[in-house]
Length: 119
View 1 (tube, one colour):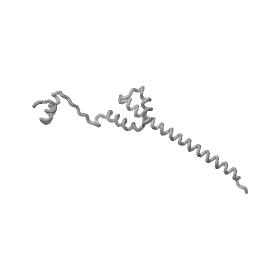
View 2: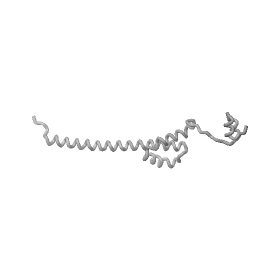
View 3: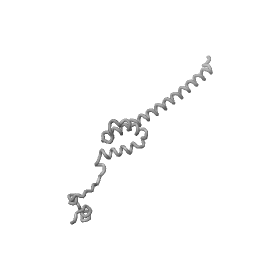
View 4: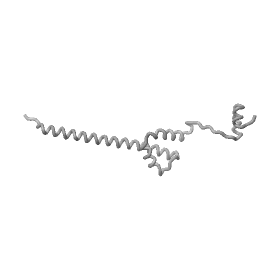
């Protein structure tokens, strides 16, 4: 009983090896495409939130999404800024006024003086 010829086996191994290399390259291309798509999807989500917050016109959304996808390091900063604007209770903002009605809330003579009230 004779087996498969050596040349046939060698040809089969070369073909299989070449095909595996092709598939590996194709898989790398798909992974790269998927990663780029994920970046663009995340950037589009941030651009949509900017439109909803009123910081970006709807017509400029796609351009801004592409810009953000090209530099994804800016995305966390922009997301944090949008979160701060959309949730004003997350931080407190002080205000200064020279109106005398605010001086009534002064708790000490120093505060009254700084507000401009003379007691």
